[in-house]
Image (cartoon, rainbow, N blue to C red; front, side):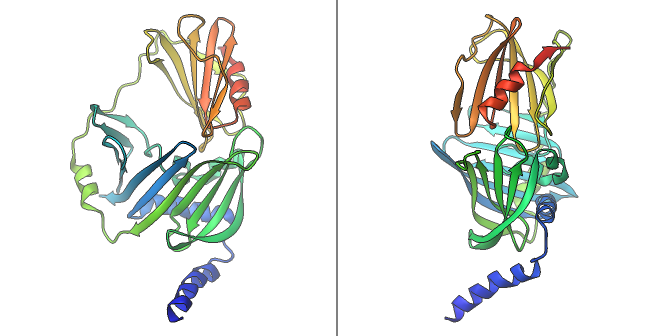
Length: 310
């Protein structure tokens, strides 16, 4: 009986102490915790057709953020971040580095940034509380202000403000993807693996493609809050032809757009949706456009149709 009472008190005290914190303040505190704290989380990524277990470790060495992501299933696959450089290490290819302020594929980068940037496309609403990974969590609903993107739910640890669970929800309330923490450890000091990563000489950052011959594609329409992040040239698998590549994002949802001369590259002809990932193809003048991202298919189709040469 005494153990039960202690567990109830542990849930009650942080709840009472933080009763008046608004939804955005929870996210602001989470953003700071993700940047400043030393921690290790074991989590699983759940989608319709697979489960991916991951370990993510974060800390600061000489006031610089260092992080390590390990995929626990399948062939070895890791990522290391030191400052604004992320290095990918896989068993079947040489390690390579890119400029990035977060490791993609785990906690959305926007959650460790200024969350005010999300307010163009989302509103924040306080939800209930629940126990996740043995810890009390506060639910924050991130609700889209239009039909051009999905909604999200995030549970924030009431003691540390670190994330405990992240759901991507469709417009009809279907769960499309989930990141679920199964163990959260707040560390007293920086782990040795991060200190070693900081000292390691990683491959130089890959240079961007030479765009002298690239065409200047622009969008006449993007959903509110979406911005162009990258313009580059890629070669599609199985094709010798270079295609124009444009990456856009609103901070949570990311979209990749590929543009090729009609008939020169084999691009998909069907509109498909799977695990929240949609794909749309459109013919725009003499170009074929493919848009891929975790947003509704109708949004991708409208973005693809709006592309034009400047």
